[in-house]
Image (cartoon, rainbow, N blue to C red; front, top):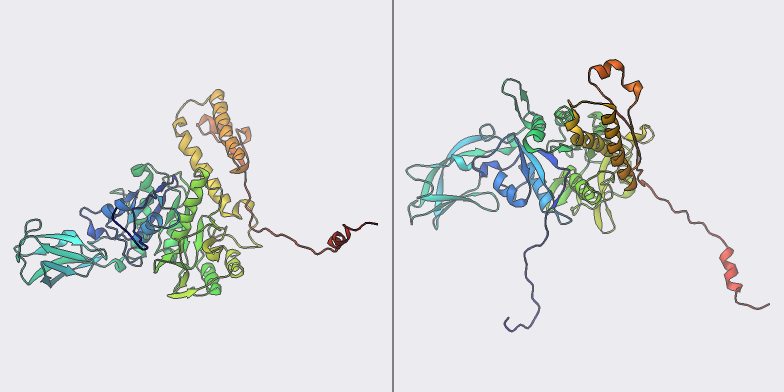
Length: 478
């Protein structure tokens, strides 16, 4: 090392690794797949890292989240400053054949490089009498613009005529995101393609969201409808957002939620948006990241709420206006089933331990009060099915019944000893298993569960007493 005198600094490669969660969220939206050759549309893709996102969906750090909603999910999961966490599943609904137009323009060539500041499908570039790979090559800038770089000196001249497909991500609408199922071709698109996740990726769908489209009531309805009995058996929760262009105040947010029926016990409703690196981020994404960061500390068992957990935002914003929300005002949202964020202890934290169904003084079913009750019970259903699938079509003798009860009770007991639940008890009851049911091969087991309660509020009552005055006299002799 040479002589140094002064103060220096340098940026070194991060040693932070991606924490892998077993609870894999599924995001539906728009990705910059026009930058990828052979891009996948309307099919689930597993993204394990930032590098995979760049290769598979053309992700760039400078992507506009308002245009490419799935880039926001990638950024939040793999580039957050708290704990990068993945993997994620994305279903891209941006289709260049539908959401774009054909364009021909003259591009100036400066120092052997032409630049087009549009979203361009890389497969669509055509330059008369020029061949990619021998005459020129294509690259994208960090901003996502396309560079045409000549490979032979002055072969492109001072300007060239370029034909291409211009991509318009804002043309993707709620109908595209909701998707459809075609019986004849067995093809699913959009939210409907969630049903393909288990078979194609061998992952149990447990968290779903369509940030950037969650605030459309029809999309919310589709998410809720597709959060139960996925592939005929899996249970999931969905994270949704309120419309920040209309719900611009706390009172308007509450009214908007009620009037648009964002009130399912399978959805966690979020408002407003967060500010991340100078850009607006849907709070639903921040909430999902916080949930996974919480789950990973608890063996991926969702018995602890993501509420009051740090999220990587620098502020809150509604309709392009920065706002601040105090704890008392945040509680006004919470008591109506809306999750928000507050500044606490030098950081922003998610704030709200309920699902969309909750209303203070109205919700009276114990299992529906807290988000963790619903999340844990759905987890127990999925866990039971994933571990016992091989028993289907096997002989069911009394020994097999007892063996299943014993193994499941051991599992429940381990959850109790770990504090994940307070009580778990499984049984095989004759009243719920009639002779005709058993003859037809239908067996039912009953599990009683007491969820671990969370401390929604903690109060310390301080009261004055004059008894301490006696301590002033304690050192004197009679």
